[in-house]
Image 1 (tube, rainbow, N blue to C red):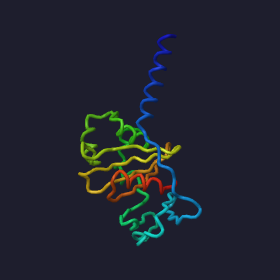
Image 2 (cartoon, one colour):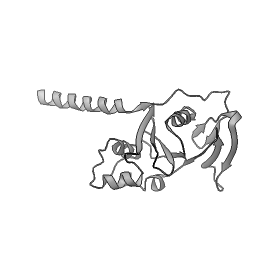
Image 3 (cartoon, rainbow, N blue to C red):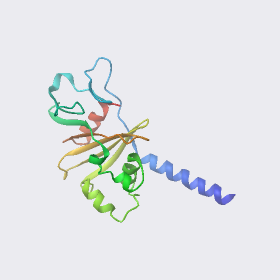
Image 4 (tube, rainbow, N blue to C red):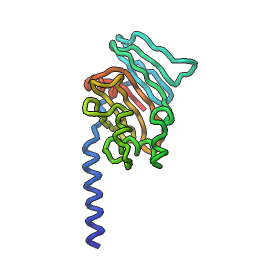
Length: 181
């Protein structure tokens, strides 16, 4: 009985430690009085006075590019076969578990360094995680990446929304504060 109790205590401690590494979304800047762009299930609330351009790419309304606050952002629904090459299926885990395992360096593979390289994760480009209820933002930002990325995913969902552009840590927080999903 003592062994089971110690095992459960270790599991609880490990989960608390992992949860401490996940940051909380910043306070939302979206409200009934703000301009809201809806891209399928995701809403982005741009700075109204600084919104210069909105382009729906192709014939689909699943991806939009905006020029807001002097920055170009692309926001779109990006299926797992494109966003992560269905790697979650190769490991028999959910999209959410894949991103968390990548973040925690716990993906069970001897090719973890190659996977991180494919996502541009290295000492110059970091992967961070933000959470708001069951919504997670897995962010890759840095100085050595072609473009910064935010992958939005909910627990128990294989749906991925991807936001790309060039943004620093402060601009990342601004973007997250203008998202609703």
